[in-house]
Length: 307
Image (cartoon, rainbow, N blue to C red):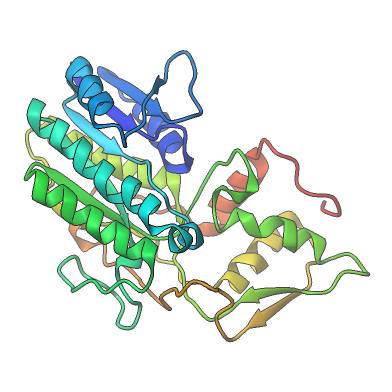
């Protein structure tokens, strides 16, 4: 039986991966999480090398998907050592354990390994991260490739998908401000109109990951670096406008021509996805369709003043 371990299965991407893989007959899928565990999910701190080695040795997976990370740029900037422990050293630890049992490893990285000055970025373009988050993820890529030759880095852009709270994604985190802005006594909500993003739906990413795992199961593992991205460019102002339309909220939004972020961020890191496109395993749900699904299924209430 083909066995997949999903590290970080309780997170935004990890949950989507679990939902996708659980539809695949004949596979054994073993989820892990750091805090949010249940009867099925194995509690695992991937910063603990002994615990990782014990878990991998016990489960003997054919493949490991590392979906756990510190993905918040501002947090990484304030505590780069903590970010490095999770985004670099933990990746090295998992890759080492995987190598010992012959497992293929898929590690998730980011478009922030690039500086955003010359998109679109191919897999062989020279990285030049602007912030601590991007630097830690680039080091994590190198930790994987230095530790095992039987693995793949998958770079992804801004993600959104089914949530447990609005703050899980920089897309859905806009909802409270969008809704509040319609109140007569509230000021308009400023929204960044400087950086171009490519918001990508986590169920689509999970579909891609399933396709990569199926190729490995068939003896044709994808190794090295791969990238996947939606193709709809939009600023946060444009994202917020489309969310307001989906919510049927008369939001009052103000575009900001200069970056609103305190942590440096790249302006446009569009990822070239041609390697995976050529394998025919991709799927891209239109943003308006995907965000409507997310909003309709949200387990947390839309803040007051909405529909």
